[in-house]
Image (cartoon, rainbow, N blue to C red; front, top):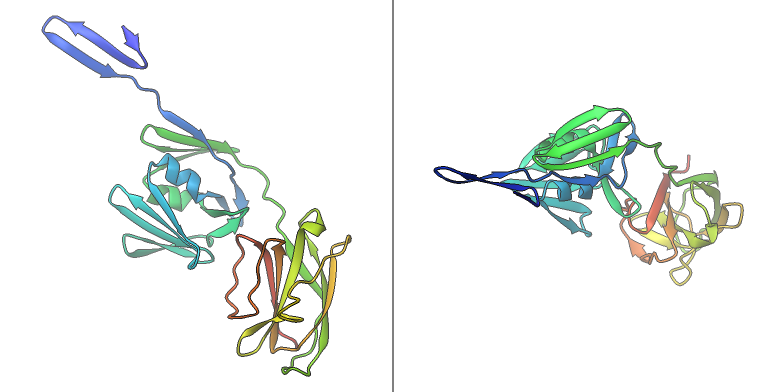
Amino acid sequence: MKTRGIITLCMLFGLAVVSTAEPVKATFSSIFIRGNSAVTPLRDLVLTANLSLAWDETNKTASVSGKSLSVSITVGKKSLMVNGVEKILPIAAFRHRDMLYVPLNPVALLLGGSIYFAPPKVTVSFGDRIISGTLTAPPVQAKIVLTKIPPSGEGENSWGTIAGYVTGINNYSDYRVVIYSVTDYAYVQPWANNPFTSINKRGKFSSGIHLGWHYTILLVKRSYKPEAVTTDEFAVGGDILAITRVTPR
């Protein structure tokens, strides 16, 4: 008699139980090519491998644990740590749509998976746990292009204009630009009580700012809360969609 994948065989000298449980199957939430690597959310691989995942927002680091495995992956780093040993990655981990993406091939193997490529199909198995999906075109990335860059300078009485446009997003009214003039620290512009620069219907922006040694421009969601004075250690992810840094010539 077969009941939920378990076949019970009554035999002459006792009872034998043979498991025919079907594999657990899942589908990649996203998988596409970046550079020369297929990338996918780390979460997809971790859940399929039946491991634990934790996120440190302060350090922008994901930690994977379980099955005698300890892995840490940091946004922007072209390496990861596996049981205290550094392993080089073909591309750095990055944030996209609030998920941490990693190069599929090396990370899946380090987590104990087996990979089967039959382009455009990709399948990764962790024993009887399987995840598969179809490679898609890479998403259009948000980008900031500067058309006017102020000179280098510093001080309360310095002043200049910075201008540019953004691409790769829709509904410009849902986003804003945050500009920092950087000297000893990064100072939000043009004022601490007025830290946002609006984007017009054509994707363009312009603002007067106090001068700095160089400038950092962020494309952010409306929910982003900029600090008035901070260090220039911004990274794409969460409410930050794109970053451009420029040093006047």
